[in-house]
Length: 117
Image 1: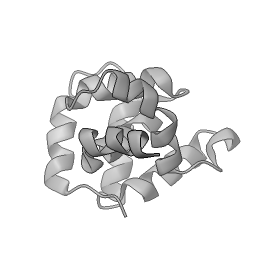
Image 2 (image 1 turned 60 degrees about the horizontal axis):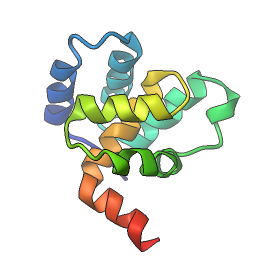
Image 3 (image 1 turned 90 degrees about the vertical axis):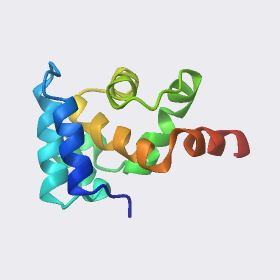
Image 4 (image 1 turned 180 degrees about the vertical axis):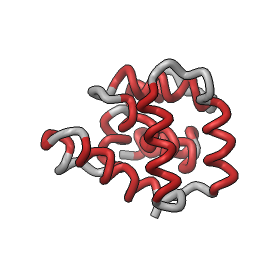
């Protein structure tokens, strides 16, 4: 289970204070609702955003954007969020748990998995 602590969540919430898309803040609220469980939050967010996302899980979304993310790797939350959000279909709320999942794995480990696959 991929999860973040409530302290980490607060840190990311602070970084999103000026973020223009309210969906990102909504996503953090959903992650908080699930006590930092990124997979459970992603599942709820995907159900809220239409049938096209219901059969895709967090890890699969992260794999889909690996080439884009690893071509411009960054450990900066907002920079990575913008990369992921630009690659994945809207809404940006789905990009938040994917971004946090990648950061939790570690950008180097995440990109290294692509090389070993």
